[in-house]
Image (tube, rainbow, N blue to C red; front, side, top):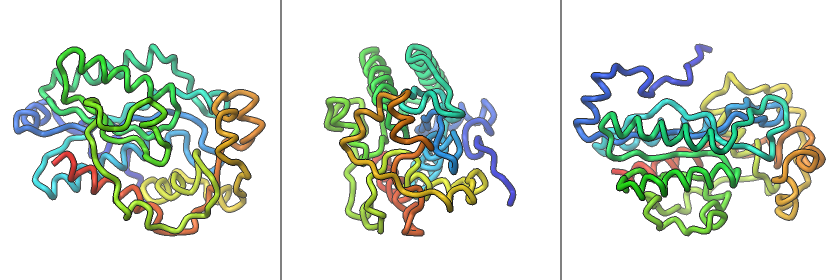
Length: 272
């Protein structure tokens, strides 16, 4: 299989002149955000960044069909992780480093003429999402109200965890539909390298999956009550998830990846 490089379809492939012209036409820009951390023995460490990129590509495609030009910035990989920080392959980025770099990236997009900068972040770490929230609040405080957060997974209840409800000015709001839940799932409680993330990576980046290891993986027997301990990372996370995944890594619905495609369709309508 020919592998598509992970900057395909982003601004990295464009000339500066083409970017300037797109901004002049009123194009919006999406910034995919993720981290580099262990996602079990079956998924790549770039899983969160890859899913954010896949969502960005699909959203831009659906928006184009509605007459709205959307560019995709090169993926921002350097988010914050704590729970999986000490697992193999994880990168440890200091919160202040991550925040300063994200601010510089957004500043660069604004300097290139984009008034609408929309963030898609697929990573559930609270400190990571607090960092994004604080960076966005800073931009709004500087008079940049169209730098907004488009996506964080609803199933991770991030609004509530951030003390928000999704209607604040830093968000570009959209409403979930019943179609997002119209899939067969295992019923196993999962939050990391689980059936949803496996389904997305198998669909969008199949060459990165270790299928032999995936076939031999069993569901974890954890519940929401285990989350606070797991989120502490270190010895607690290793004791609960020694293999670096939380949930059932094997989807039972071959169409589960469409959860992300439907999300992109809804978001495209919101930004158009």
